[in-house]
Image (cartoon, rainbow, N blue to C red; front, side, top):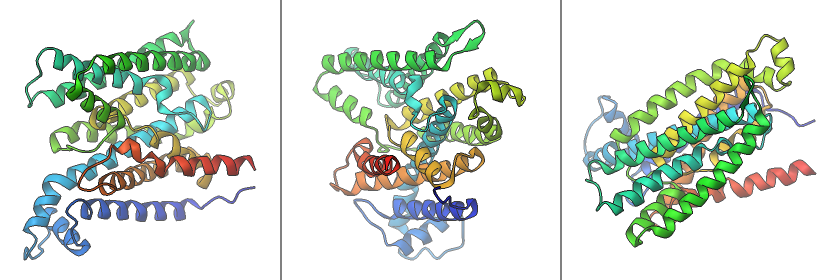
Length: 344
């Protein structure tokens, strides 16, 4: 039997890892800052009485560029990881992914409509375009998820297998529609659409950040309160009902929470697929299936992983920047290694 890590040890290690990821994310980039100056400038931004000698550039870079980007990465990673835990609990499968309910493909389709449709009408005002893109992606994700949930309902019950098949079908349909928009796009629009579909934290700002932070806070507060219900659901739906769990209500809440979280994350940063699958599975291997540990640990691990992936995307070809989705090689080979190891 595999030896599990004690929760206290796991949370200590993940907290230190998250702090390290934040520190490096603030310090490193096309213009790298000394780690000590990064720490001093960060303390000044928090209102601490730190001497300002030689910190003007560091404060400007941190306050206007890297701090919103780091916060965006933490929020997106945490929401995707928590949504992955929710979907794996709902489908009772450690290989489930938030995209199974169609939210990612719906968000991608909404964004494609905004990007390509905007070019057809002669472009949108620069001040309005980012918000329209985010709103369309969010509405698309929620709309497709609602349709998947509706198709999975019958006689007042939600059939998880039917919902899974509906999600796969609508994901394929959404991918085909995005492919059609990609074919119809001109060169400039095609580059924007391709970069967005691969995900990026570039262009992070406080205006784009605060809606996601509100959603991330709500998801982070709500899902841990349902940890016991998720543990009961692992035993099976009938057993969970005997334990007093309102299974249908729990399913609705999990689907809505996933749609809300992933829709907001995709609207803010584009499609980033590997976090919601790799992080919950890895944490489950380390700490076991107890959702009281799995949920908060995945929150920390998801934010850390996405910040490290963003660092690779920023530094690999600096000063150019890779889409963050292309840095999935951080998680994907390690995940394959875990699968091979599990088979043996």
